[in-house]
Image (cartoon, rainbow, N blue to C red; front, side, top):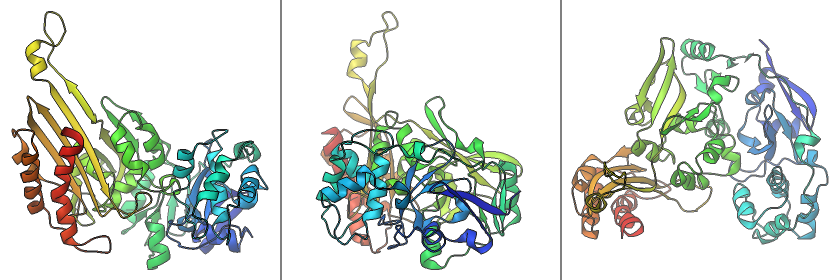
Length: 475
């Protein structure tokens, strides 16, 4: 077991031990590695000025925010900063298109833009806009930056060819009260023996707490080296995602499997955030406005919890006991999330026993299923939700057979709406039905006022969203 972290910066090996290993990557790059092109502005993972590229194992170089990553999370990683890019085609295009003014955000844009060309030769405008949502600029209005990306005709050399070297990071690491084990059993034992232990994977929230709240966990645990938690697979109508599966990997995997959830994940956060954060982390954080949670509630997702006495399965709706309170024992870790696949819009009917074709009577009674997810925020991209919702219906003969509804941002946790669901069952599909259901839903929630919206605003959203669903999906 090692007592230090090993990683590469622009191809050169670095080691960090003791207090240095708990520095943020951004600070280490600027003050220890002399890579001052990496800028620090928000220290919250919002602006992208600190963007660097990170590669683990045999994966691709991916953009991440270095301001909220601690070095202890990066054992074995290969890191490339703007200095490591050299004068490439992206920087030349930025100069030709006047993509910089004050220049403070420019290194982050150049790094994020270079990542776009790691797996393609040319990019279209949608790819550019999606790929740069995590980078903010006060000067340019973005137009020349987008033009610069589109004007890159001879893409830069692939970074995996420029920096092919990787480090073996399979052995466990223990630095102070931080532990990165190689087995799930060791992780469980460490968590059991260290009260208040915080698991850091992407640390997209914990990193902000450290920077802005002077948060200091009694102990920290990383699951990165536990290979069994990397799994991401289909499993009989559901998707199993291990604790190490990033939101970006999950988003790509569900594109054709759960397109409605893919649509929401597309505006969940920036590429930098999704390349670091995990699905299990979004569940474990327990935010009442976690963007994946409403779908998980209406789909009936399950959590596999690993502890000293083995594993147990908990339904997502039973996991949350209150604000930041969970059905999770002191020694337990969320090892996997089982996510059932709910079709967005589908229909089925009983087949005629003789022909295998839908019978005339079953066509009249065609059962249809509908799913719609909502995220309400001040900005479309890279913003925390004020209100979220998932609405799932099964219908036939112009009536609602069953309804499953989950709201976020209206209670201490994401909640199901049993009274509204019960009211809708058996009702005709009509605007009046959904208007009345909205009034019932409003009475089921107890939102609070905060910087993202007043209690009255959220209550009105809780009511209106059902009429919106009717107009968008059923009318």
